[in-house]
Every structure is written in C-alpha cells, then in structure tokens.
Amino acid sequence: MSKRTEPRTPLPSSGDLTSAPLVLPKRLAGILATVPFKTERRLKKIKLSDIEMGKPKKSRSEKSRARWRADKRRDSEILKFISDCLRAKQPVRLTNSTLDTVMAGNKSLSSARLSGTRIIPDVGLPHWDHTDTQLKMLAWGMASSEMRAVPFTLHLNDLVVINAQGDKRGIGRHMQDRIGRHLRNRLGDVPPFWFSVEAAIWTKPHLHGAVVIPLGRQEEVRAALMAAGGPWGARQLSFSVKRNAATWVSYATKWFYGTKAHVHDNSTTGATNSVRSAARDWHQATRREERVLYPI
Image (cartoon, rainbow, N blue to C red; front, top):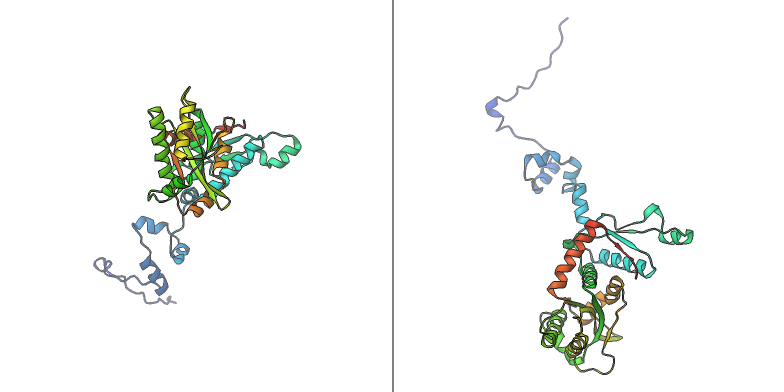
C-alpha cells in the first residue's frame, strides 16, 4: 500500500530569493516601519513584545544612567539627609553607589540610636556632570572649607537689589562681579568665595556664603563685602567661624527654589573659578575614596 503524498509548493530559485516578498501582519508591518533600526544585529536583539510597544527595551546600564541624570528633587533630598545626620552628630559616608541611601546592617538610624549601636549611613553621590546646583554648592562649601573659608551673611541695600535684578545676566552673576570688584579694590586680588541669594515675602534679599580671608586682612575683606552690599545700618555683615561646611550650605539653600520664584531669576548663586575647580576635584575624589563627613 503506497503512502499518499501531498503536493509541495516549489521553492523559489536562487535568483528569485531577493525578489520574494516578505509577508507580515499589517499591524506588525506598520510598527516596524516606524521603529528606526540602525543595524540588522540590533533588530535581532529586539523582542516582539518590545516592537509591539513601539520602542526597544532599555538595558540595565541604560536604566542606571537614566536614574543618575540631573534631578533637582533627588539632590535636595541628598543634601537634606546629609545635613540632618550631621546636625544629629551622625557621621555620613559619601560613595559612588547607585543607591541613594544604604543603611549599614539594614538598621535605621532611629533604631540604631535606641539600641546604642553606632552606624554610618552610606549616601550615594551622582557624577558631577549629573548633579544640580545644590549638590554642586555642597562641593563649593566643602572645598572652600579646606581653604579655610569663613561663612558670612550679607544684607543688601534696596538700590543694589534693584540694579542686580535689572542685570540681564541675573542677580547671581551681578553680585559675583560686584563683590569681586570691591575685593580687588581693597586687596589687589580676588580671594575664593561663593554665595547664595535668599529672598522671600518675609525677608529682603540677602546673601549666605563663605570667603577666604587672607592672613591679617579681615578688616579689608569686611569693608569690601559691606561696600558690595551698599549702605546699611547696623549688623549688615556677620561671620560664623564655627559653622560646619555641609550644614552651612544646607542653611544657605533652605529657600533655594522659593527664592528663584520670588525674584523671578534662575541665577541666584555665584562662585569664583577657583572654588568651582576645587569643588569638582573634591566631589570626584570623595566619590572615589568614599570619604566620611564628620560633625564638628
């Protein structure tokens, strides 16, 4: 008894392979037409489920890089956590970990204090290129502290504020140039300094910052800063020698985004190039060496 054979469809010859049409479902064909595939190798790596979503699936490294891009809210939370720990006499270790906050031994700070256990929380710092202004200012404060900079608060005359707000470059750049000009006139050079403007409905614009005072030149620096602030009554300028650098930066930026909204200006900070350069070096070295910040 012979087997029944089904007729087979003849295959196209080798010359017809390139001209043979590729039949795809209409929905899949439309999606493929909108997805920009660069190479055939990339096409093989993409799953059908990814194509149906209209975009390729991100790899683990791509997700990690996206997480560490500049994030204002994340940077504010990191700075606040560091400041809160130092105010509570709790050291903090700064790392390059992708985790924002890791508690040693999986214990919280509160439970550790109750049990009498001393732990050091790890706080991950993003790469310098992915940090926002507040974390850059943390580096400003720490780097200038190593230069023995002295924290200061400076109140501004109303006319100085009006002129600063009328500057197209922004109030921050205007005050940076103004302070630098008065320091150069008094000292012959501009020592490293940085500041942040604070303003709100309940307070007039004033500056919180730090300046390196050359040996024996404190009165000249005081006179230069007061001249930059404009005519004022008593207690226009005050120095805070015993301030912790990290907590001082947190205090200086406590109304950071509220100030921007109040003065309608995004430029509310200023720093010399020497501070900016030293801050970048400090930030990168801190991530690499996983330095610990201790309360003073």
